[in-house]
Length: 425
Ligand code: AMP
Image 1 (cartoon, protein in one colour):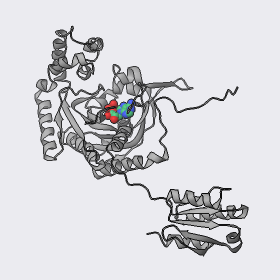
Image 2: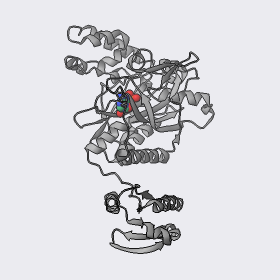
Image 3: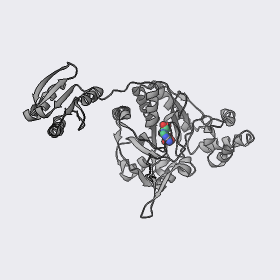
Image 4: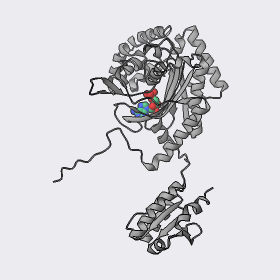
């Protein structure tokens, strides 16, 4: 009996195969284009970070840190984490590279950044997934919140995803949120017989998260719960009303959603989430908010920040679900069919010369009949096939078949790259 082990991609991780690459490429291009038009600069931060960066930055009592973070002890005994999110890394980089001395806000983005969370895999929820992360650090004015939300909206607009909404809320700041949390806890004290076991735990540990419990028995309790916007202090109220004014002026549609609190500890004031209306799977495509306390938490001087993340896999699922056409890369221009041992050598040399002249080509497989190779060329959709047999090799030519005109000519093999590049537009 064979004891060969079959290796498979780990649970919650996927291979992104060539067939789906046009979607990934398109999404990446749209995201970069919108970010750059808004003046954001690209940054890449390491996947491995100090474990404590996320404990401090995301919050100890969050699902991400408590249950989902991949923690690694390296050979030197240091505790590291595979990053579960990017905001803490951006803020670390902002501090580490003295970006405070640049004009504020510092506008940064990272695209196709892999993130790792140990959660139960399901449609649209992976253990390794990818995000676009956009952050504007160093400005607390509501125009920055509006810019960030506008940028996020513009990406979905340019991707052609139509069935989405932006949900918006303000959860106040260090001054007014304690009053709100107190009101929420007092309200829930009266509802103990109605709520689920998890919510009983949340009441002490993470009271804001009471509002995004998914248990059906908790829904009426949430609906009637006190709303954070009722408890905003003057400054937070002012900030929020300026933000909504800006968004209206920018024609960015949004819906006020009093249940929206978001999962991470560091948010202050503005929180928002992009949801798809489509049924099934995970319907949060992206989200973010303001985190005015985070940089201080990470050891810097008090510095405001605002940003969001979009989940790439979920965007792609929705592009496919909505049947949105993606520009496909053109097929290679020419297929090189070859028959015989000498022709094979000429063929591989020709392929390289074509590449060097900028002509995309596919080298036919060795040992396959001409008929089989022509069929393969037809399936790929190339415009030309270069046929090299023993006769062509001897005469240093190729028989060049035009697949659309259905005619063929002889071309000196050394002249073929020039001949084809002159036909490219
Ligand atoms: P978060 O960092 O939790 O605010 O997530 C931002 C976005 O990343 C979400 O709206 C999702 O689109 C995406 N996302 C978060 N967790 C996962 C996951 N486990 N698998 C796939 N996408 C995810």
